[in-house]
Length: 182
Image (tube, rainbow, N blue to C red):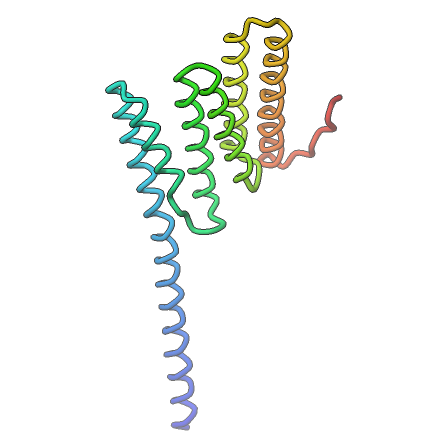
């Protein structure tokens, strides 16, 4: 009888130890995500303060620091933070005006697209920022054909954003996808 009690006690001890380890691992995992998210939030706030002082270059540096943060692999929150930062950096770069600013902004959008593992609000937002870049390009260009092409690119970017938003809404509302219109 004593041996069975010892086995049950040992089993309970092992279960408790395993549970404690799981809880500890879960807490570490949560902290491993919360720490970089907190850092990103602080960098965003610092960038906002730099923008209030008219220091666009400093704000750009802050957002680039967000892009250097390492989030836990596969964390959707980390992906969203990085996609948001790519979009914000693209807008900041675009605010400087000119062809080079547009090129750099589109490079940030493309980097975000490559990072995206699934459709999300932040993925759709990247496409909205792309539309803004093409709109700025169309305003800057004087050649009618080039201007028309930039406006076509703006339209395509809006269409991509709309398609992502519609897909997400249907998924969230558990509705069937509609056939694509051509």
